[in-house]
Image 1 (cartoon, helix red, strand yellow):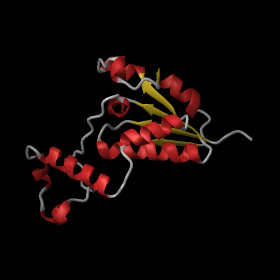
Image 2: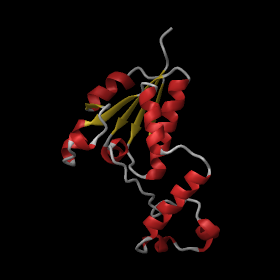
Image 3: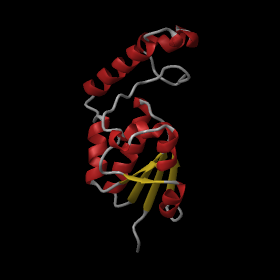
Image 4: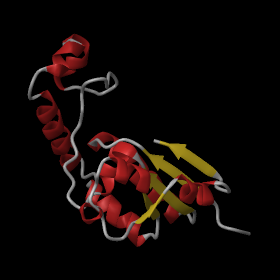
Length: 159
């Protein structure tokens, strides 16, 4: 019987959206799934050698905020200069305090587990991303490359 396959499309490039594809991929690989993550559009931020991921509180109403701020702090307040930096710092502190693995650690775990990491060539060209900015151990390919894998995947996720 062939291995089960998990195909993931990663489209977001913020710190909070970086966790789901790497956690799901590393877990699936540990469970014996052949796994592929296709990084497209802003998801390409997740496979840059130098990560500078932030949390965007704007447009993220489900984000728990300290001191119950989500109950009394107006959504418009998230546009105040410095809010993104403040929320990013708070999230990084919480991640560290709870002993959650960093994105770099999760990426390394995926590489060790032979998760196939594919950067979207069309998006790289569109945003003029230099190949040297991206991790060395990734593939480059287009939608057809992803569909070769995803076409017979047992599970496909869009994140």
